[in-house]
Image (cartoon, rainbow over all chains, first blue to last red; front, side):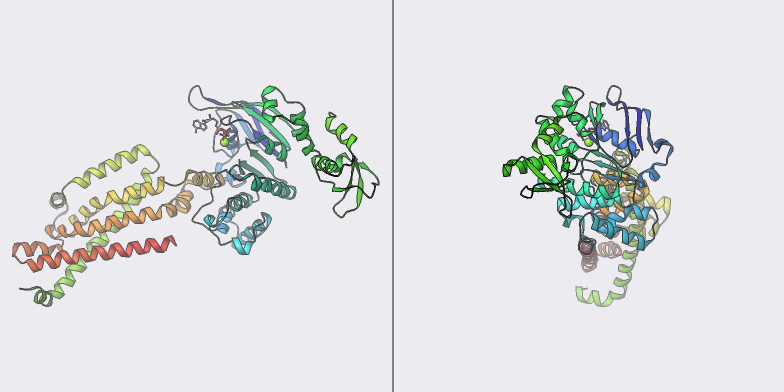
Length: 314
Length: 206
Ligand SMILES: Nc1ncnc2c1ncn2[C@@H]1O[C@H](COP(=O)(O)OP(=O)(O)OP(=O)(O)O)[C@@H](O)[C@H]1O
Ligand SMILES: [Mg+2]
């Protein structure tokens, strides 16, 4: 879907910013770009929508080199969210969201319907928020509008540069959860820049770890936690790797199918192993029951299984 | 001749001169605004061009207006043409400078967002930059217009008419009432115009 093929970029003579980057991002996935400040995350991302042109190498979208596509056309079909959000202060929320659909020449009723659908999708009551100005919104609400605006033209690709960077930890966690829920529905190909490793582990289907313009490791969150490519990646992930793994596994995939004792605490299948362990610690039991959304028991998760599965390499 | 009898005797002339004065100002400001917008937009894309253009504009403003108007007469003849040309020159600086600062003072994140979403440079100018620069541009229009109304008095010197006629004739005939009435009318028009434009700015902001 998106491919970087031996891409390099320098600013000035000896300021190599991207160094031979090769990377393939699969359709419908969230790819997180992580790494320290100045390592080239934003620069890499901007090469996808041609805000930055590489010196050598090729960036391809759907197998086509982006430099063979008109940049305006390319950008209208790629959603773009930046940390500063950049909502236009002189326009209403609706007009902000409508920017790309209007450029794409959609008829007015379709634009209006799209704006309302998107406001609902990002959990803002259309009737209440359509006519508001950006300055009347909280930080979290602004970021929701920013995401709605980026989704408006129904692009297949979204580029998100530290979209939650300016939010307080609570709002941030909430936005992450909501965004993952939205992604379940919309299945976009998403390139997501962050310098928060926990955010990368939580949100990413794959994570690209970068340092000084080079790609150090590309893998799933579990792969990166279990087999950091070098000490730099290991340090970046930080300590308590076992506990972090717990957050990546869900009860549904760890449980044994079958019946469970009636007195066990019940957790939904999509609860994390961390929540299961926490529940065991709280009630002093060595098992929890796992149930589906309607409360029907699916199986049981035992502490021993949990430890085995988290520690096991697969 | 005292004040009141002057007003009674001359009121049709006063109205005619006021109309002339306003006419020259409106034409000059329209031309100046058009030119100022074009120049201000053009230099907003190049800091180096901006430094040069704003520097030249600043220099022109220090040139004595009476001298400039006189120098324009051999080129443009007697009448409203040299007056309008002179006014355009003098009102350029506040206009160009405000258009320029308005356009370049916009949060770069907004421009980046617009660019990244696929707006063309022209669309960004029209839909984002100009609306956001409008308060600054309006301030420029206000300063320039008030300046122009005052300098417009000198237009009488090059035969363009206007309220300056009262001042020049008043001086040569030693008629103080005439000078004072001319000056007061020019001040009044300046103040009214200033208030009116400030009103427009306030209305736009809310
Ligand atoms: N237009 C530019 N001109 C010169 N140098 C640039 C330019 N853009 C980026 N750089 C440099 O390239 C390097 C990478 O920048 P980039 O913005 O991609 O980093 P980043 O990984 O996104 O960092 P951060 O986490 O701080 O946003 C930095 O050293 C930066 O100073
Ligand atoms: Mg960055």
